[in-house]
Image (cartoon, rainbow, N blue to C red):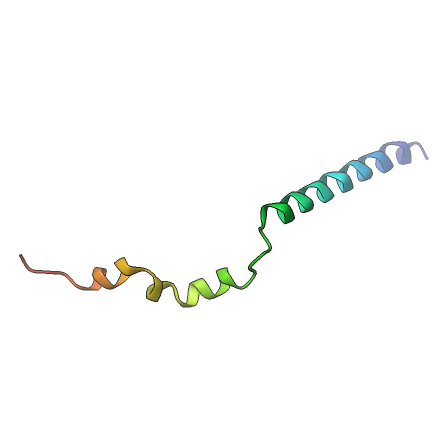
Length: 60
């Protein structure tokens, strides 16, 4: 029974920290575009202009 005196406040503090981190992430716009990073892997070479120049080497 004495352990509940310690466990309940610790769990409430953990919950408060988790909710704070969630709202901080929502406010910063982290979850605005969920598909961007997934598609950036697929189209990575097409979007970078230096990727096309890496394959071409000029003989000077």
